[in-house]
Image: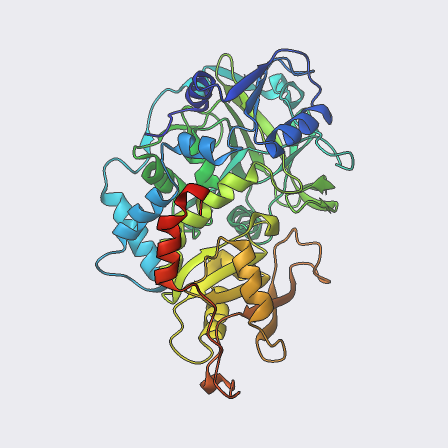
Length: 483
């Protein structure tokens, strides 16, 4: 069973010896980031900084920094558990396409332990600050990298609602602290909250916004999941954690937030009010440039009596993004197979930021099957942002990058097996010569057929493998030598 709140997870990690309390004073200007990044890259424990300069709040860092902690936070033994549960929802009907995805998730509504449950009172509203009492400087924002344009909140879960349909969205976006009552909303062009903001602007209305920190782990994960816009992240969070998420009405905006969050910011966003946001050392490992983004004035802050703040450090991988991305990769394999049934398995390498590269295995059934799969991926929701697709045969382990490289480097004639196109890329992509769109490549690393033009004598060569009888005898006879 997943944990109801952040502090329950922290207690469990401490019991396991997987959390270190840091009692010495630490500076959120560069020092917290340097410490956390070193500990994360060394595979170290979660950190609870109890004496953060300029703030009375303890700061939890690196909480999801290993697969072990990520799985513990969600109450899982392996990432495949959720994937298998999702696959179960898709049978026996095996619906196709995005409509099938929505129908499958619609089945969750009939499960009484999944939909969020509204409560009248909540721990996150034990303390309420409004108007002039709001002071964002009291929250431990991080100035992580020397070229950053200011201090940022990196793990605030942003709640908005479509002004037309009323469908809510939960997203994870970086938030720059401009002053004691103003934060910048880094809403990228492909994100649902940006769409809500644009709808409000067309209607000439303000947009209500609530930002929650230190949420139940399954909720924090759900905010990162690439769900279609009309699927409720809180429904998915309940599905992941195996029980309903408790929600409470905000005090000053018509939105709901997790009752067991640690801190919530509430405000109304006026269309057209922007401030320069960034630069920011992002998960790409490079700085993203300064751009104008909406500026939100915070009217109300609610919190627990002794709140624990939570943030993360992003930068050159590996970082805490890694376990979150690996969870998404495994959770969503069954849904990707619904959209593209040709896929056997896939891998999104962390070094590629998870969205830059996709390695896909297929059970090849006809000529140019690999190219068909590439085109399908580039038309599949957020997978459309993938810049490089490598397609291999089903007998290749897509998670073994040495094996994949051997196939991709040796099985390709780039005059025939390289597919080049253009399309949308991530808002943060610095390599594209034009922002928001750029070049893409697909590599067909499968064995080639005569029907595809491979007409050399003898056909495609046979791969070298050991003689199975000899291999078995060697294993039995020489096992004392570790063979």
